[in-house]
Image 1 (cartoon, rainbow, N blue to C red):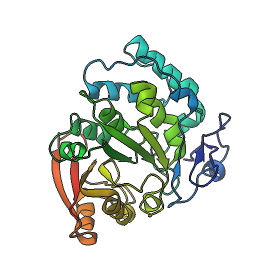
Image 2 (cartoon, rainbow, N blue to C red; image 1 turned 135 degrees about the horizontal axis):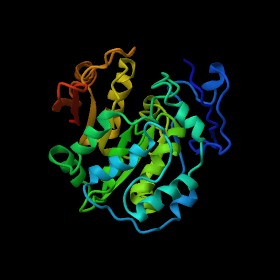
Image 3 (tube, rainbow, N blue to C red; image 1 turned 120 degrees about the vertical axis):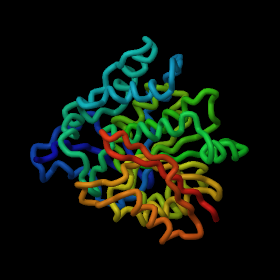
Image 4 (cartoon, rainbow, N blue to C red; image 1 turned 60 degrees about the horizontal axis):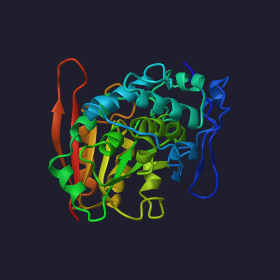
Length: 327
């Protein structure tokens, strides 16, 4: 089965991406379907937030549980992948409509086409779908506790958080909406700039408005590039790194371990929510294999442990790992 969307995204100047074109069309053949994407290990670029979103200062209120709020919003994209108002307050519905109108469009047909395949290695990494471990991660950090709370509380000038492979950016939204508010700035990273514009930015805006977007930076590119010394937004270490469904391909483990070692401050923690085993996946990933990679590649610099395990005998068995930088 061929995949049929053709995003039109470019890079304007070093390290800055231009938004996807509003005239993006559905590709007519599988050979051209991926032509707009660059290859694996592509460089990291900053994705500017559209001015129309940043200038909207409407009133936003969080009603009820943060988890319910976040999950409710993001599920409007599944499975039809359409930006439509969800249930909730009139202000919330208006916010979501504004996000859909102001965000550079990649086309409804193109978004629906992403439902055909989950991942195309090195080209499209699944960010338009909502994956189950993202919900586990939201619950784990709502509210932050233990090592995560300690890492967020330590900095004097506010904590820096990096979400890897963000897609719908649920964990980022959850941290931005915590009550009482956390003093955090979040970098939202995804392999594909198109994903950041199609779902990450609208979800942050729909939940927290322009105020939440102003506390975020958006970064597209590979983990390999992000771990480089000259990567954008990576000159200052992060206090907390979060990510879900990252461990499906073992070939990326070295880059991910290196990234944690380079971008976490000493005492910082990475919180990764994943399926215990990615069976049926060509990448052959598992939590155990990644933990072994951490212990092999960074035996004195990083400490890895399983802090939670979910097994309801119905869905996939899932785990949450903490990786702490020791030195």
